[in-house]
Image (cartoon, rainbow, N blue to C red; front, side):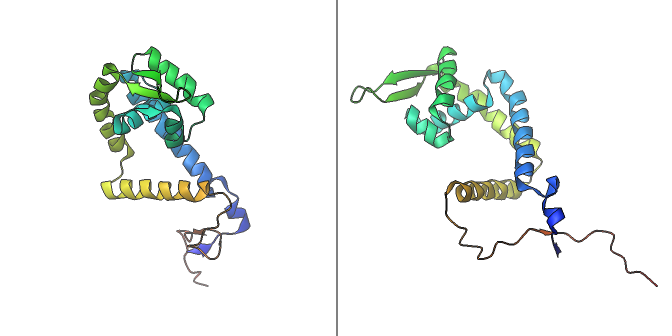
Length: 174
């Protein structure tokens, strides 16, 4: 392995951000196809995952768990409510807080969603261990990049990435 040159560092295929962008687009497209049968968009599916896992949540909690602002979340919740999957109710103790409850239809959709999650894992073509490791690394990356101003303390020097040596390195017989 050799240190990357400045030109190599600036190549599109050397960028982690581009690899993540391309993977995210491919993942979202795969989910779009899978979620058609449920009548959900990918962001709606994420909301449903949180509600299936955690039960009733406030709009604020959902926003924090999904890293979505209220301007994105509110219309999404309105569409889920119009579809009869959730209900929005103001808390009686503090009417400023709106809770999101699953309806019976929303609860029953969970059974139909389980095969979709399994199918997506299969489509990744990753072995179980690689899938788990990738997910953990992405969580670590998100946490590191979400901590404003904090320096990576595990890596004392920030060196350019290392790239594999060219495959066709043969000695010149001259």
